Length: 459
Image 1 (cartoon, rainbow, N blue to C red):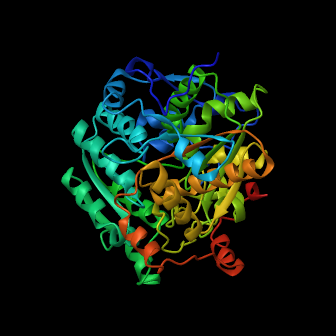
Image 2: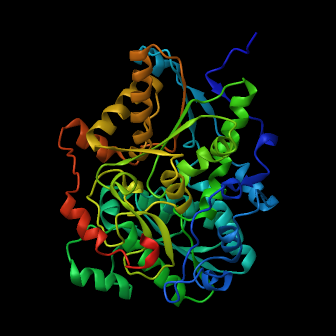
């Protein structure tokens, strides 16, 4: 007889993965290499070390090593909050009247409230090992900035965070939390950097974007002694660190012989989605499963569903290396929606390649529909979800209702990447019906596309 499936499936501490899983090693067709913006040739270790920490650069450029051991110093950090629970959404299933089984991996049990700590810890650890004294970074909704603030406090590093201006206004308590951990927070764009001043000169009333904030953080890192820039999404070493999510999830499901039919994640730069799907996607590529994978992004920032597959800069000031990805253009400024962590113009190169090759589906969701699903989930499951996570909830609900319509019993898995307790202004806007949906016009997108560099690989 099959084991009775508990509401919460926990792993033991000694079951935390001891290695990260590098999905690129198992991909038959690899993502295109990162290019140096001056030479248009693949970047070298030395090129990237001018901006990033040494060990993450090695991981970024490694597309052949399948399993990368997690250092003991990082394992000590992980043990403070991992493993995270895998939860069977029995109450949501009942409310929907669906024959589907719904599971979610909950990454909001740590103090930062999200999955971002899984990469913040390693990047701070490697910086300390390298002998650095400070780091810079950007943050949108604040989850990454909070996680990096925690990690830097743990490992004894100074941190400067450039937070997208509209998010710093919408979420003042995120600012307070980061500063309590000792980080210096600057709303972006700002007058503290050359790139910030240029952006403000051209658009004094801008709400900012992750691309703007990245420009400022990179500039500060390059100009500061014993300082490097760290990034919370988009790059492949971040997806590597986030693979602990998928590895733990797979181990928990395997205990009960459960095989997911559909796996869903929200998508901004791609870190949580890539981490959740990694080992399952490896099985799909190897022909061991037919699992479907769905990325859900905001309709206001639709890099998967309406973007172009092209080499583009990761920041507005065009200072970063060139990455081939699904992009809306480095100059695209998204609307001030409440899912700040998903307001990025591009998508991770690995996920972009998987999408191009047909392994990954994508959907765009309007903001009010996302909050409808979030509130439905909260009322029955008892967790207030982050607006970003709620994109995945919405798609999971849609899939479950489709199962109900067709009388199919499927296993649906989604990533609940974090909690929404710093997002109550967004829920207030939803409750008083002042929330609106903004979907960019073709003209809006064309203005963003015009900022994509014109190089042969765009074809």
